[in-house]
Length: 369
Length: 151
Image 1 (tube, rainbow over the protein chains, first blue to last red):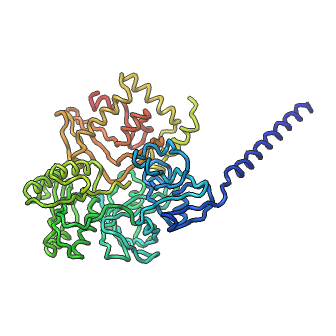
Image 2: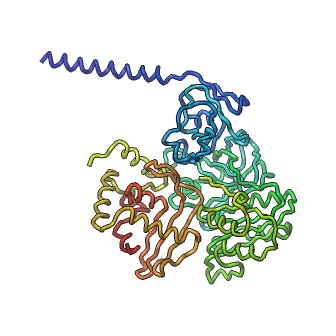
């Protein structure tokens, strides 16, 4: 009996010893000490504790690389150019990197850990990205499933952005949602409004963020967002603007048009806005008024499935078909495309615009998540 | 069947509030592996494969993708409506890539029966044989798919 107890005690002792050794080994092997993150050839140098993913190191130092999945390696958005050797590309990165990106050293910052000194290159605009605290000043129902939020800034008190860019709203935990989540929404207000931003948000059935926004968010509550992000903004040319959007895709186009109007930009704009029936349309009065003040703007709403009670006298059909009708009859001119909507709509619009001579590199849209 | 720790982690990600508000499991309290195996048996009994089902779901999406927000008649027998919003969802199995937030509704014009599925659902069926848990708003019954989509 005593031999059995001794054996059991010995085994327990050995197990405990092994566990202690493993913990110690982990601390020694995985202790990378302080490492330096050198950004843009020394423009910024961060001294950080080594071992963490680059995405989180940068965020802790208020450099916010866009990420839709929060660092899970499933969105492929958090790309940065790594100039030093950080080991081979991981299988988790492989699907998101093109051959050119691999050659240039582009990596997913959520997958690359800073285990030793590391040099990276970031686009300059990323340094303008900040975290903002704001108060929900106003919630306006635009349609039965689209809301406009006006967020007045609390800290910092103002924001600089280009018309067309987006922010990532931080939705706090609620109900069964245990962790905060981030979702991207385009700013609909013009950049001249620096103390507040407006967002246009469509309810997504079962969506974590929009369920919060439509069922829990109240005027007066505080909320945080990170931004501005995005490469979707008006290019400084004299080309005619062909803008096509549907639903909440209205947001960045509205910001761009307001900005053009305020700056007195003399460029023709044809803005095709697609909706199903009149119940899905909004801002009609706003655009009626704006067209009177800004004759370069042509706002063309199109209903794909108007109801008899709509008594709709405007354009009927798919927004791409309506846009094509106009493109056929417009006098020849240099043109650029500005699109905002779902991937399906974007694909259909790109096909249309390229058929009418707009090359793909002059068709702009955001692929944000 | 015993579930691997990997599937335990996937099942955690399928709970409400992680990827979507309602999650992927509904009121189903079975292990993920059992949900998948039970559907696998049903699909085989129906003489189908996950690929055939996913291909059929994809077919209707491809036919109507160009006309979001409008009904599109497909092969005279079906009406298809694509409802899409901006944004993407990740696969709960952590498969690489993101899937657009697109819901597809197919109505069989002969029977007036309809089925609604997401683009993510097509991937979940094709790659993982996962039709979601009982009671999930996006649960797809293989028998319903076969009957309504005339497979």
